[in-house]
Length: 362
Image (tube, rainbow, N blue to C red; front, side, top):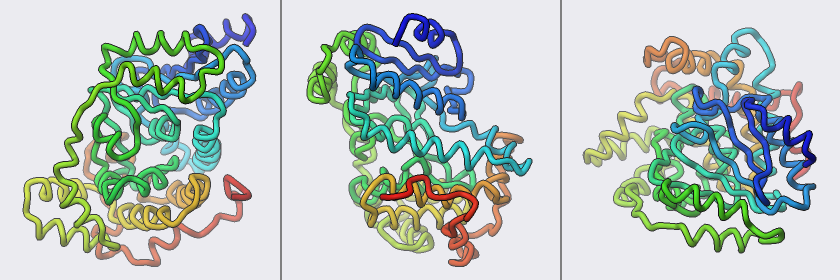
């Protein structure tokens, strides 16, 4: 990256891209919005990857978020809502480019370190959890609460959660519950936990990594700063595996009702807030993901479903209740899980001829 390009990138825009030592830095820079991801930011990250990949002076790429609240609260839901109401096409355009970026992360040839500090939700998970070096800390709260918005865990979330141990991914996908750092490692959504106080020193060490350090070298640097912490969700694994191993949402609910533990009661309450349609759609996507061979295959399936979500009243109602009016009282239709027929769910799997698959050949 030449000096003039670096100067442009250093401007305090929504995305800051710069080189520090031998590290390429990607800083999401919308702290008031917890760094919610826009289409322009997605495009900027993709361009930065091109630059960092070509630059022989870049040994490692670091993703971080500005501010104290978190790495990224997800995509710009308000913008998607406005476009959906106006009959626009932001959803199809944004998700296509975002999913292409998500799929690029595990294939990126240089070490990519995502600092999953604070809140990491939705699109923030897509930007971080597909990478090979995922750092969490004691403040980390990772969640995919999309079922509460009339949506489902996308950005490859169905691939990640379907491949978590046991039924823990099903639990997180349907309830939208947050993982702490140790929980995320247990769910295979993160790799190493460090104290936030150690991040400046770790970050400095990464910026001094020798060219050609590679993934094994970055792993060695991360291990020097890592700490151990027990997963809290592990205490409930037996019940989670038993309840969420069922193939129908109704059966999951019935199992939780039989359990009668405080955790089961809290889980039932979490499910009761979600869109019944989204719960059934999410469960089907997760089960299909278990039979998938790749992240790209899941992203293609998610794209078809997301296109249907974008034009649905369910999505607009979920966003209205959570973000626009903030009354937290969505009027789901149908209102009960038992009323969501297979025909309702099936419409989310019908390809839209206007929009081809994100990945043409898998």
